[in-house]
Image: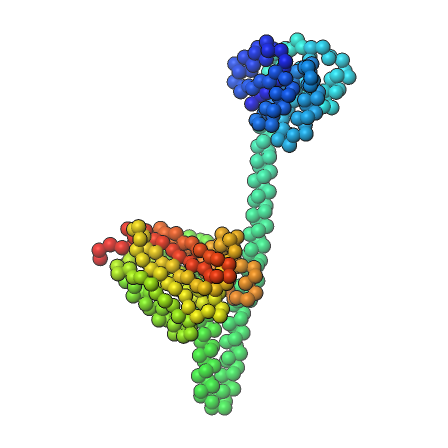
Length: 374
């Protein structure tokens, strides 16, 4: 939009009509004070400013406008009938003007100048957008590279830990066998098995990430008994964590259509996280119900909880809460994988958390997609 500033009404009207006939959007001001108020409220590509005005002349108006951050990209053309000497033209340029035109104005030349300023403005705007996009892209490459390096470091550490443990238990097994100490051998075998299962879980997560990235994460959907699935999960969790109690509230009493193994993967992730991030507690609550044509499942713990900014990022790939990353093992991909699984079932995943009091992770899936008569 163009702002015309002139204290002579007939000059404003005639120039406004000409510019509007050539497709330009035009605003007007009949004084320097009015022009400054409009510049603060609106954005202009070009200001055509009369030099001779009472109270504030065009030079003074231009100097004030040049101090407005909002108008730093706005071009100014001075128009003058009386001040045609070089010293006035020089003052116009030093006041922030990009051109100085003397009256009487050749309207064709003025139109060419205006079109040129508009073209320059559009080019600068596009260049600015490209520059912003490039900077954002560079920052995203930097962040992605940093995340990749961090993940490689974390993955190396997490994979080495169970491998080192297994190697140690194998050495102890050899000693136990040489001594004929069968009970000790059984104990070491059991501990080695636990570490191998941990290693297998880490590798499975890495494979899932690879499949998600390549779009090859496959689903085998069929009908299954959801309550039976939950009871089986709770039983297995209790066997490996006998001192931790999972309290189940509610039932579904319906066959669900979905990938049983993948949904189990999500629920197990919720429960193991509830145990992992609740040191000193011995209970979590699982809630399941059908509501508003949706299946709802939530797991609430009474552990360390999260800050609001952490809640926003907890489902991001490779995200690990800074202050807990050195206390709790993990790759930071379990919740990301879980979110992808739930999305592929047409559902939503989320968390409610209070720092220092605990968290409740939950998902909802539209029931019309999941349950029907077998």
